[in-house]
Image (cartoon, rainbow, N blue to C red; front, side):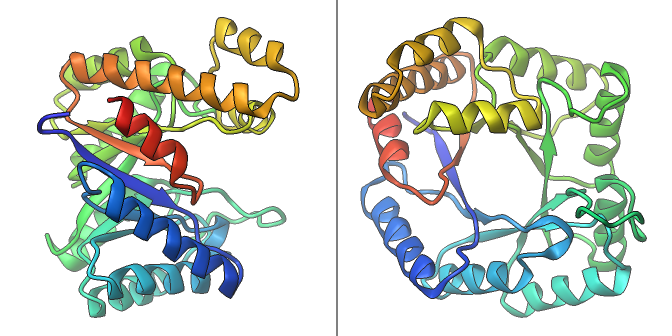
Length: 277
């Protein structure tokens, strides 16, 4: 894994006990993952529903001297609300932000003052200049709400050119989809790094539900193999590590320099995959 860089995503725990467990997971990764994570991102619930929990997780990681990249979603938010959050992070000396549109909370009809992630990127650049390193989302298999392929590519190009420094993809298990997406947006002048988002597999049933919702394809041969294991969780995990490790190897062999792991606040599978690499 020479020259490889790794980053890791956490979600904000809902309880103090969960925060302590997250601390243990982080220590495990810091002590055992090679290379050490470049930074840790922390997710942000729909409409800011986890705002205080996100703040608590970000503060805990920052106090350990780690580089943190909080997620910030703008849908349903006001400019004042976004300003307050960014000022809070600036006071914590946080330099990285994952800038997202986010999901409109159920029951909320209005999108607020921001309609797209590109609006958020432009707002941050106008207000804060180059202070923040901005990371945006990319969808190699296309956003589930996109009208068509071309509109989805155009939306990504717009937010990249609005001032994003890098992008992290939705997870995928089809390497060709990733490289096709990168090729398409590079043709349109996008030069920022597009970092593959890697989802380790601990439960096939959970993965299948989540993938249906977010538009990530699980190739048929992988689905059929998982289904053959039934309730054998150890076989599911073992095969999942094998599939994801081989996918990462293929990405690295074709020039990818950085991987972003969706850890689900667990260290073991990330460590196993990194060890295989």
